[in-house]
Length: 415
Image: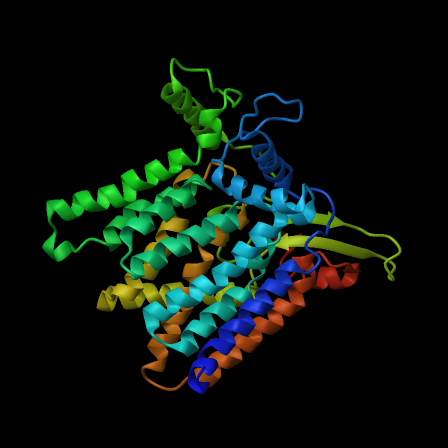
């Protein structure tokens, strides 16, 4: 391998190894189910045992998210057992893969090893990305497949992109918000032809639908799933089940201590506490142990300005790269404003994160056209890194003195 090639791959290799290590470190801690693992890890175990989600009594269980993400969690359970490591290992690996994917996307967009490495490093140094990679929830799969979908768009593999957006939607429905924007991104509007439009409908409507239905095979092939016999045939039963799921999501308006309106997401107004304990005999008069799903503040707050800059530059230049990034922001963020009466949580914003980072990279790329600001970008990365490691105990659930925990609660709404 040439020296030049080694210099190119060494930084991303180090970042990837760091990301993997920090995601695997004490992955089986804390013990027991934390936050919504009580649903998804149990569902995943049922899927690998029975092919369908059953409750602990063996009866049909009403489940409000499609099965594919839980099948992925189930792979870890199948290999390592129904334990904390088993149900968290696949999210950890997928979260690490997201670091590589954003590197590849940035390389496609900006053709710069420096900017691609910066994008990967920012993903590796984000607290929300770390936390969501260390719990058996569905959102890290959503991020991975959205990133992979956009990567395939950049490589002009649109049929594969359609397959992947189907897998994203088969993990969480919110992925399907992106489909109109993906279609808009991939159509030549200056020379719009009917066959091109029909091809996009096939690629980004029919293919995702087929993929989505395939992921329901366990429910389809079983007679024990929820509502399996509710209709006159398989398809009417599945349709009725989906109407029940839709009604659940539409009517979900229960109060929750960590509910967060999307207006507050980008500024980290109300992060989600996944776990909190006050351990005894920890070497201090009072201690705290928390896993707080929150992004690295320096990264997210800078990202808000970067999105504004990207939007401004797009308005002026109609730049295609800016359009690509803003489509990602719009598809992962704006739809939530139309359902504000629903109970929502900040950690849903994990799917916005890659495009927030890409907006930062776009802003850096714009600035570098006028002057070599790499030194200042390095200063920013140093600030993000310091900020990340300062908050690391509450990303990983490390016991710290209560006073140190309180010092990290920068806003009253974080408590």
